[in-house]
Every structure is written in C-alpha cells, then in structure tokens.
Length: 269
Image (cartoon, rainbow, N blue to C red; front, side, top):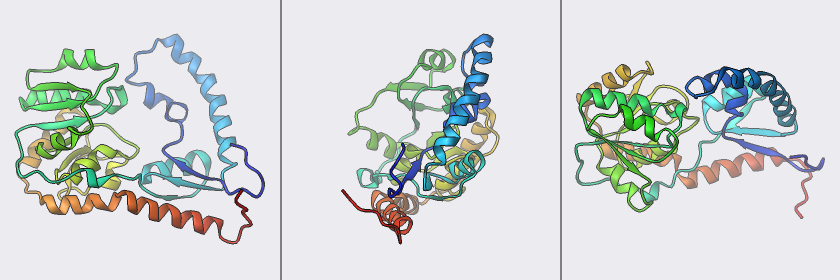
C-alpha cells in the first residue's frame, strides 16, 4: 500500500511471508520436486527484496505474537508492538462433563504437523478427534490407527461443545498465534502444545496445559502422559483465555492507533 504523506500507516502483521523468508522450513514437509525447489531460490530472493521495500512504507508495525515480532525485527529491522488476535471467548463455556477423547482443530497442511498427533495417538491407543479438512487427509488416514477419528468440517454451533467435552486440545505444530487453543482454554480445557510460536504467548505450562519441546510423536506422547498426572482448574484456564477476548483486543489496538497518531496532522475524509 502506498499512502499519502499525511496518512499514518499501521500494519497489523500476522507474519512476514512464511514461504519467502523461511522457505526451507516451510518446504521441508511439502512434496515438491528438486527442480521446483531450485527454481524457488531466485524467485524468493526477489520476493524478499520487494517485501522488505514494502515494509519500509509502514509507519508502525504491530505483531500478533512475540515470535512474529522477532521475525519483523530480523527481516524488516523494525521494532513493533504486540497485540494478540481477538478471540470470541463468549462463544465458549465450561462443560459439566468431560469425555474420554482428545481433539485437534486444524487445516490439513504439512506445517501444522498433524502427522505427529496421528502417530502419537495411534501409538498410545487413545481416542483423538480431528476436526478439519485439507490436502493431507489421504496421507493422515493412511497412518492413523482405529482410535483416530476424522470429523471433517464441523458446524460452528457444534464446535464449542466438542472442545468443551474433550480431555485436552492438541497442537503439535508451531503456530504464529493459534486461535483454536485459546478457544479450548475458554472452554476450561487444557492444551497440550509444542513449545514454540504463539503457544509461548498463550499457554502456561502446568496451568493452562502442557508444553513439550521435542517436536516428535514421542515428545507428544510424553506430554500426554505427563498431563495424565496433573489436575487443571477449568475456571482458572477460562479466566486466562479471557485475557485474549475481543474487547481486550479492541482496547489495545485503539490505544496504539491513538499513540501513533498523536501529534500528527491526520485529516479524516
């Protein structure tokens, strides 16, 4: 976006382009030929140059998590505020009953690492419900045991109940933020998550769930078993999730807008 000199440009950034700036990490689980990968190298170089140039037009960056703020600092050489995305916690509530299953809600793409959840729960022989769709469905089904159930797309009205009755929410991949885990917390349910990215902003190990640092099926199995021996306070988990509510987001973003625009002549038209 090229703005007028008097216009204040604030960029609320979900992440710098993952496929441009972290090409190797993004592509490591993708099925792409060697020739296609070689063609990406010069293309990504020019795309990064364009992206950095475009970022210089921004007056003020706001990142969705600490991990994204670090990327903005590294790739764009810019400091920024952190404002977590809004979560509609009012849609979710604590269930009086919890059933014997775990849940994943995600798109089926490689970087989400759903393969680890499927492998772990197949090895553990525990019930796992996977909500979502995507191009990895065939592969994930091929490695899934009988305790793993693929739910497909679930209606918005049904999802809160499914989350609220689960023993825990599973997040095996690194997310820029991760809305679904916070939604699970809003149901009072603990989250078992890979300790990277947005999970470090939203989850407190031993309070809102369990974090595991080795991103493998074995690491996830150990985290599930560790959670077995812990007692979680559903009300405390929900209270923590409410720190990410829509109204909190609105208040923090408006404060940044007012602060950045302070002292500038910014006529509204």
